[in-house]
Length: 208
Figure 1: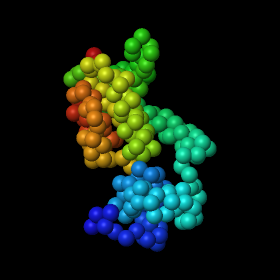
Figure 2 (figure 1 turned 90 degrees about the vertical axis):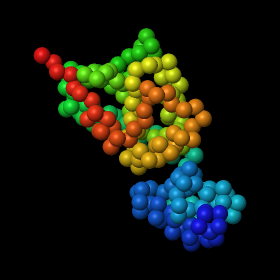
Figure 3 (figure 1 turned 120 degrees about the horizontal axis):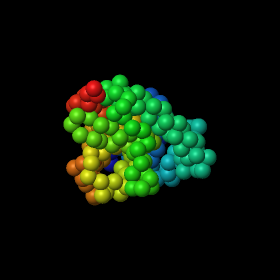
């Protein structure tokens, strides 16, 4: 049954929010409401209940307005900390496979106007890695579009590594298919699992 064919009572929506929380450990943003099968679209909630803020208030959720400055600031700080943590983990992963001498951190490009998170030398080729942690699929799309503009004139292989474990490769591929401007062939967007497979496909340099 399609979302539009279901009668979305307040109790049914409450159950949907509960299921989302049990699965993800947090309550959904507007975009996540739209793509979660056990919830109506945010537009339906707007028409029938006056919007997500009112619905979250009715449900007694601890946060009701995700657009407020304090909440957004707290989320940004949390994302920043997570990003640094994941960069450290990625570095250890790269060094353990390619060796420390082959992994360069914060490699500058365009006369130091930007930096890759990692620049890796393998026997196959040289490739760059940009690690990012989007909060949700909406911010994921914004991140990818921004990075595509940043790297539009680059020819070397670039991996955009999404380290949010809730955004899997299937969701990434689905999101990329809806982009107006397709990524060039030298840029890939990978989740952590696919990134590990990508690494194993490369041959480390042998340093004498």
